Length: 379
Image (cartoon, rainbow, N blue to C red; front, top):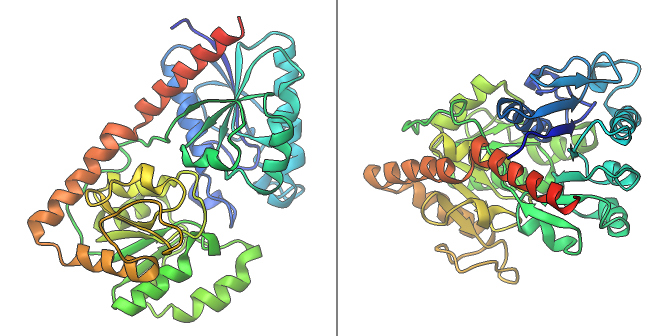
């Protein structure tokens, strides 16, 4: 493939790459992490890459910024007002594109770059990191062809199938960061934002019902403080339910490696779920509802168990026939009851599944193919 001049349009909200201690409550940092990996790998492949991000970001690419530090760390801006600064960053990118400085733009945004993409001849590829619902669905339905879209799961496309999709590319992770382990001494874990859609209260209910330890690894945003106070906090006893908060990568890895299983009773159409592959890479199987990307990411019976959320909403004929909380409880008990050799086999299968399908290398190869395809479309 010929070497390209690529603009990677990332966020001004967080510094790139995001660091656990500087991610505001209510944000994950996952999209910024993915764009960082793509940027670094494209530089290694010899492409001329320009990263549009906050001025305190670290990158091997050329860095273009409109602020000295991330909006979330700037007292005059803050996470609440970061969108205005991001429009400033996006505008800067498209002004340079109009001058012919790039062959293509790869955007972290969906709607925000869609407003600008049609104003230049340089193609924009937008990776859809969020569910296509609410205002996003309304806006993008009116601008379906202004960008080329990469979905992060096939399930993500269902809410807006008419978009100009060019590929589905699953997220990848750095396998050296998530080392495999055969340990399973740490009980169950939940990793993610402590919000209703992630099913944290359901995970707490399952843990208490089965008397199995659950570690909640993540925090809530201010808009979900009431949910935290009513549905989670009263059950934290540091015996069955423990809240460890938002952890740095080294601490998080230890929980991933030592967990018996990852409990993921999601209540929404999860577009991907980076935490699932981080868990499986570490050797820890996943027990999750069959919503969103879960059936594309987890291999039922091999890397965990998938459970239909209700009798009325069956997404597949999975091994566990019970649905809802009862089905998740059965899946959890089945994993705890596995003979050591069988459980070891499942942990090995988890790692192999990630090695074969969800690495940074595989993800970046997918994006290179998309870049080549889109450049071909625009000749």
